[in-house]
Image (cartoon, rainbow, N blue to C red; front, side, top):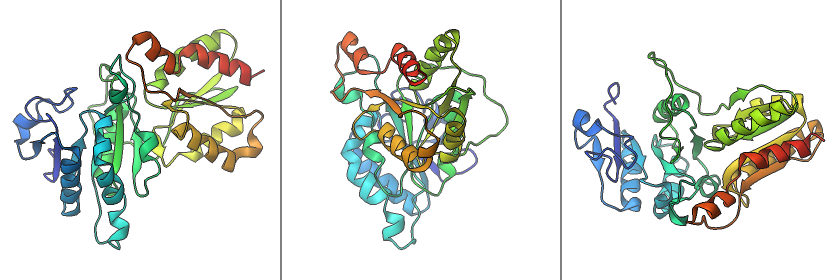
Length: 307
């Protein structure tokens, strides 16, 4: 926002309150109420306003206080945001970023535990990325703001408390690249967002048991980085997908299909996919935990794959 006066932020409580998770804290004081615009509780209206602002030359960052609320703006995101560049015959670009907290938190209830990546992945024209560390959150956000395409940036409610030393110098990450988290030889584990930490917890146990897993944070949910993923599969010949998304119609299902289409001949075992159960997320903490993939399940899955 310092370097580009066309960048603005809009959403519920993003201004002087600083956002529901304090992501925009201090920005209203620094940049004023018009560039950090508090909106009414009307997701369809302010999302449409942001898309219109992008069409006329601004670079809006639209925050959904909770990503589940953006279902109210599904028409604007699908019919307008994703398609206007095409339906206008290229007359308009839509350089807008839609971001906000999502995923299963701690007893937030079903409506506040949505994973919208499964809803949005089929919309033509949208890019989707999921951050998992402070470093890639900053780098992906910068890249998304500078992109000429509409980008949905998924943040996880349980990752806001992470701390990490990030470079003082300028850096921007590629929106289409996966991250190699841990090189290995025996099995490729593909994951993203919060599940990265469940996978790395499981990896410690697996190493102690003599396994050498390769862990990739896919980051780009649309399009997939099939170059990085494919090179790993050609080395390990086994794939485990770990996601917090729903099993039916989720990111894992699309990723499995892409791997089968492109790397079938390199597989020595069926692709395994661990996903959240196809049920509304319970409020009760014990039941909530049962619906989401846990590290012990990841260990068991790798043991089965590597038999």
